[in-house]
Length: 349
Image (cartoon, rainbow, N blue to C red; front, side, top):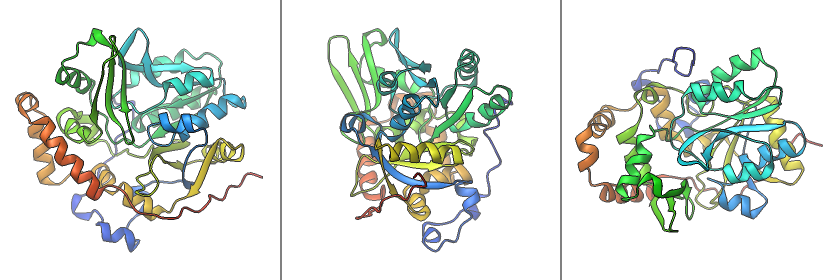
């Protein structure tokens, strides 16, 4: 839709920095990262919240803190309604219990139309809204028209497939939609994976590595053209902190003074633990996706995506075998090794 300005022109692939350039600081941070106020990694201090979060549970805890301290009256984010446990939608949460029951990543694209309807329905309540990076420009325009949007939060957009990917996984598992009671895109031991629970209590799981193949098969054409990755323009952005020595950590990027204050106040009130993070380590963690978003894919990956995105390869591809290859690749390439994390220096007094 033309009124969502999530797409900007990519730079030529030939000008993309290499991994060695990150260490040498030979890159343009305004292109790769955009503006931000501070970086941190952290996790919810409540171990139950941390264990059930997609990474470290920090974003959910910060949202709950905004509700608890009366900075907002409601939070709007994507989740599943009990009457349709397989189709994500934007839902309003008004209690901290609502937020923690709704948390976790959802790897399924939601268009601007349901987001706009959710915003129009909030009346006079002060809200924090969690949206896909491509929707941030839309929310900024709506925020200029109605002052009840107080915070705009976003996330790192690693997998944003069509909903057909979810239905494909159900078929792979030989489970009918009406048999499903719950879907979790980051269920199971960290880093989790596609998990569903049926009405008779059965639990089925595919590891997170399966999303790399699934994304090739069901990536939306618009997402292949979109340059938004780290919630550019939002107040606070969250993503996985791929730290080999410190699992279950959330990477937090405060892009505005408001987002920085929300993050630091939750830390000051002992609800999240925060540690320092350097720009270079962030880039090392997410280098591949940043290059993919800002400069586009190389010829081989473009051709592979085009091939896998056809109807027949979707049915014939050896899904489990290629997922195993992806698991090995992730163990070798994903993550950085930082042994000792330094406490984050907050401006809160």
